[in-house]
Image (tube, rainbow, N blue to C red; front, side, top):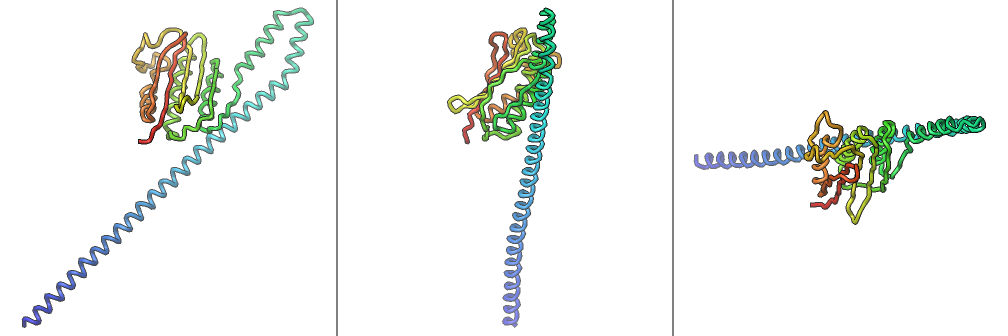
Length: 261
C-alpha cells in the first residue's frame, strides 16, 4: 500500500516538474517570439520612416530642380530680349530722349533685381529652405543679401533644423515686407566650432522697445511667431539665441554647439 502511494506521489512530482519545465519553456519561447515580433515591428517602422524620408528628399530635390529650370528659363528669355531692349534704348538716345532711355533702362534693371538666382550650398535641405524662402521674398520686393557656408548640421534632426530656419526666415521676411527699406540679410557660418545662423531684417521703429517680450500678435508683423520654438531648438542643441537691434535692423542670431551628453 505504502509502496503504491509513494509511487503515485513520485509520478505526480515528476508530472509537476515536467509541467513547470514546460511552462518555463513556453514562457521563454513566448518571450523570444515577442522580442522577435517587437524587433520586426521596429524594423518595419524604421523602414517606413526611411522610405518617408527618401520620398521627402526626392520631392525636395524635384522642387529644387524645377526652381533651377525656372531660373534658367528666365535667364534665357532675358538674354533673348536683351538685343531688343538695347535697340529700344539706342533709338531713344538717337532721338535725344535721355529721360525715356533712363526710364526704360531702369525698368529692365528692376526686372533683373526681381529675379532670384538659385543658390546651391551642398546641403540639400539647407539649399531647399534658403531658395524657397528667399525666392518668395524676392518676388515681394525684398532686397536680399546672403552669405552661406556649406555646413552639414549633421548633429541636428532634419525636422528641428527645418523648423528653426523656416521660423527665423518667416519672421524676418514678414517683418521686412512691412518695413520701408525691405531689406533681408542671411548669414550662416561656422566660428571656432560653433555653427551660427544670423538673420537680419529692416525695421522702421524699434521692435524691442515696443514689444520686449516678443509676444506674438496677429496685428504685428513678424518676430513673435515661432520665437519660443526657435529658443527651444537652440537649447536642445546646447546653443543660445541672441536678439538685438542695430542701425534700423532687427537681428536674430542662433549659436549651436552640439555636445553629446
